[in-house]
Image 1 (tube, rainbow, N blue to C red):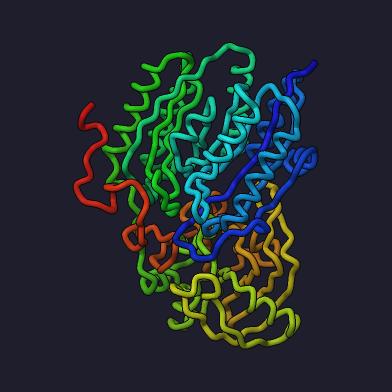
Image 2 (image 1 turned 30 degrees about the horizontal axis):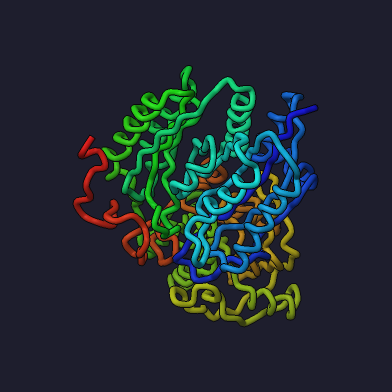
Length: 490
């Protein structure tokens, strides 16, 4: 009888400073065998897990439930309860299994639940008993004791921007096989770092953070290594456990795990001053775009739907209008009422609508515009990794040479596909605005002549001191001065 391996997914990155709550219906949910059809052939962790287990030939894959949402505000209590209860029920209904490989993001937060992943893993552990459980994580996860205690191995991404989703799933599945075969006994060491990090030094291909990740990869490639990573947390999930962490899992060698975790942790702490973002004021950003040759990309990290922001910022649009910007510009705004008006008027009509500020009104005042409706869309498209987007209805409107993609629901404005799927090719423009701190670089660095991180308001601003932190670990760098070293007593 084949060994039965349960698989499941739970993903959403919460920005608690975003006032627009995440609802149950914001999640794309797939249950049972439909997961195999939905994820095979994609560039996701689940696909990596499925392929490794399938190639081995000894295992029966038992798909339970996959639930994923675009990043957003805190998850409403009733919706979170329903989501987690359904996840546990799906796992219970799957019947007895010999092991589980779960793909989580790790930075969810509810209205009153600070650790949804730890909570659901506690319930899953009660259902599954003592079978091996391996969980893949985003390196922006928030690590709690409950999360660490409930699983055998946590396997984080090794790249930023994240280009190793599929490979992380493969790593997790291969580790799980070692546990099933009884050839490894995981021992875990954790080093907590009171620091929040942003900025270009996090780019693993070129930045200082990449050196820390190389240390982690060296551990994994060693005889005793199983998994290692620097998990920097999502700086906008303001919960009591928010900080950075180093996790090292070795094969039955705690002293090695502890020693390596401390070595990597010291490297991160010693370089903490480098892990801060350098931002450019909006007026200066626009002047640079006006004088540049070739494509300019504005990174609106403050309204990054990829980090959990509302997506309704009109700050850059307002700046372009006020500056009389005449070059070709492309940007995106979430505004359901504006989309409804465009659909009422129809394609090729002119509409006068307030735009922006519908989801985060304390930060953004609607901007009244008169624009031409270029096209209308159903919002069904796929991101670069093959997963489906849920934009709701979409319209493209033109305000002179400025073209605006307006969606009913937040979507990831990271890759080029979100624009291309609606007839907008970024290479046709002089300026493109993305709502991402750095993830966009995978698709834009090769075509951009200039990338500008713009300093504008937003619930996910890289200017961390501009945000109202209340719950995270304190004191913490860079919010506080003279933060004690976590290694002072070592």
